[in-house]
Each structure stands twice: as structure tokens, then as C-alpha cells.
Amino acid sequence: MMLPAGKEINIVGISQGGLISRSIVEKCEGLKVHTLFTYGAPHQGVSAYQLCQNWYCWPLNWLAGYMVQYHIIETFGAPTDYFRTWWNLDRYYENSIFLPYINNELDEAVMPSYKDNISRLTNFGLFMWTDDEVVHPRKSEWFGIYNKHRQIVDVYDTKVYRDDTIGLKSLNNEGKLFFYSGPGIHMTLTDQYIDDYLIPLLTDGTPTPSEQ
Image (cartoon, rainbow, N blue to C red):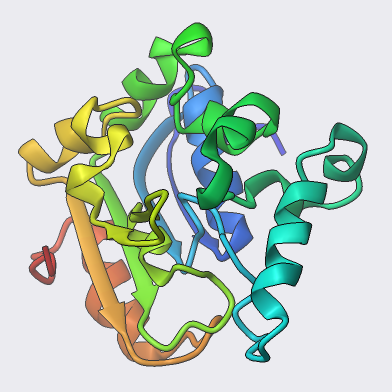
């Protein structure tokens, strides 16, 4: 469907759809987006299959992280495109074909337009499920990451925010970046999560205060 020229739209993405939604905003020149809102989107990737709780799970996660960064494997499924191997970041940045690019983390492949397009948003809302058993670490839904010691790095201390690679810092300085959270496992979408957090941003109402 073609949008009328100059038509302003809102985009809401859930889980992996949040990554796709953000990449659309970044890459589509001329697209006028008022609010981008993501529920449970792994903006900084996933680093483990959290549902596996046995002793052998971390060796399996390590193997999975190693395998998904072969280009032939990455072409078979979207989740392989955002598996972030915190234990081998050099290999991740060298081989990953999606996430480092839309996060503008590669000095040799920086796209200024990605930052410009995100910075033009009126609102960018990020919702994190506090009991999420799919996205690991959960803080990825707020642009947090694991460092090389498997310690959580808050969004404000990441390269993406600190260097303002995609405009998060710019949005936050203008009061346009909103962090929300609530109980529930992955894909738990309640009326409250829509009415309290999403609707005010879509309608230019008084937003619920950001949680950080």
C-alpha cells in the first residue's frame, strides 16, 4: 500500500518486529514517523537461549553463537542476525550482517542518515517485560548489553548511546525517549501496557513518565 505524500504514521513493533520497525525508520528516506514504539524488541540482540537451564546450556549457547556467525547460517533464519556473542565481540562485529549495521556501530560503515531519521521521531518508546524468558539479557529491550565479562551495561554506558550512533541520546535530551517495563513473559500484551504507555504517545497526550 502506498502512503499519501507527506502522511505521518506511527509504527509499533513487537519482539523481532521491533527490530524490523526500527530498521524501516532508519532506512526509509522520506518516511514521516511520529511515534516508534517497541514491545520486547532485542535492540542489542540476544546472547543466550534463556529457556535452557541445564549445566550444558552455556556450552551449547557458545556453540550456537559460533555457528550463527557463518554467513550461510545467517541466511536461514532471522534470529541468527541478532545473536550477540558477548564472549567474542570481535568476531560478532566482523561477521554479523544485520545488528551492528542498524546500530551504526561499525566505523567503516556508519550511515549518518540512520541517526537523522531516528532523531526526527516525535517519540520513541521502549517496553521491556521484566519476566521475559526469550530475550537475554532482558535489558537488550532497553538497549542494554552484556560486556565481555557477562556484566550488564546500562543503555547510557553503551557505544550506541554514548556516541549517539542512531540518535538515542539526541532524543533523550529532547524528552522524546521513553523507557517502560512491566511484569509478564515474552509477548504478554495487556490493556494497561497499551493504554498507559502507547496511547498517550500516539495521541500527543501526557505521557507516562519514563522509568529512566
